[in-house]
Image (cartoon, rainbow, N blue to C red; front, top):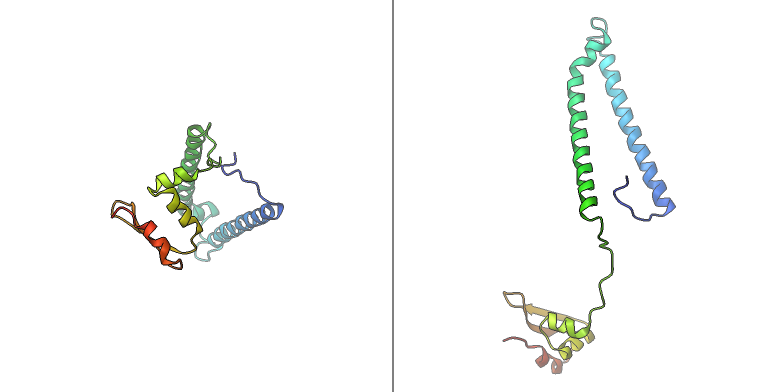
Length: 153
């Protein structure tokens, strides 16, 4: 089951596959070199059989494996929970077109002020502590447009 289903180009999929193969190869190399160093340790090579040399390190490896399994189960449970919870929803729908009057009403300004804002290149918006627009300064606009924008004083 793929958790993320997004369209990708062939080159992105090949790069992803190559990086995955390289990561597994690095893991395999590190794992094999660790086992090799345990087995060829000169201190224990002649005195102890192979299984007794691996046994003290098996507890650590088992702990790592159990931790990895728990994390994998937790991520799988989270993915299944989200699949069930959001199964009927499509969150990638575009929003409806916002009408200018609704936008002006949302920001508590007049449609005329909204038109001036759309035509402006650079503006500085001041807010009240409650988050409402208190004043709008036009940096590059003529002073004639500024009286329109003194709000809620």
